[in-house]
Structures are given as structure tokens and as C-alpha cells.
Amino acid sequence: MKVLVKHIKGMHFQGEGSSKVLTHLDASVTAGGTGHGTSPMELLLISIAGCSGMDVVTILEKMQVKFQRFETTVEGERASDHPRVFKDIEVVYRFWGESLPEEKLKRAVQLSMDKYCSVANMIDKAADLTYRIEINPNSI
Image (tube, one colour):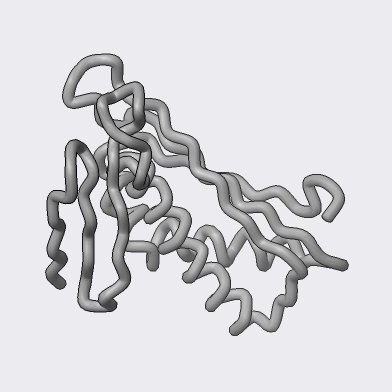
């Protein structure tokens, strides 16, 4: 696997992998950027959600579990001193649908986080990574 990241201007960079999809990275305006992209640390959290979310959808399809909506939020707390790594990260899986089997949802998430999601397993070695699920947390 190989990516290319080009400097655009200031703190704005553009990344491209073998998929040829462009990803823009930038620092926030308060950190000297222009806000034209996602910060690298935000991308890390997005990567956890995306990687695990793909696993969960695949596993639930195999379990023949149908949901109406599925979202993941990831919140990370960073160290106050440099290099300001993530100390704690919590992943919340939210599912909406009729008669969702809680045990199957829990099992799908557990399999992703403990076995299949490469990103989560790598990050778990550096930060305290926890997760939980919510079923029909609010109206659709």
C-alpha cells in the first residue's frame, strides 16, 4: 500500500492512494490552516469508524440482520503535551430499526473491534480504545 501526499499551500495538503480518490488535509484556521481539509487526527478517528463500520455491515449482512440506519461516532481525548497523542478513544455504534437483535449487533461490533478492524487494533496498542452500542437512541 502506498499513498502520495502533495503540499498545496500553507497547511493544505492533498492525499491520493491507489483508488485515485483525493483527500484534502488541512489544519484548522486557529492552528494556522485554511480549513480546506480534515485534520490528520480527525482522519485517524474517521478511519476507525470507517474500517469498523465496513466490518459491522458485512457481518450483519451475513447474520441477515437488517437495520434502517447505522452511524458511528468516535471521540478522542488527546494528551496535553506534545506529541499530543490520543489517550482515550470511545466509539459509539448507533443502530435504528425494527426488532433489532441486540446480541447480534453486539457480536458484530465485538468481532470488528477485537478481530477484523486493522485500524482499531493498531490504535488500541497506543490508546485506551473503548466502544458501546445504542439501539434506536432517538427518533429517525
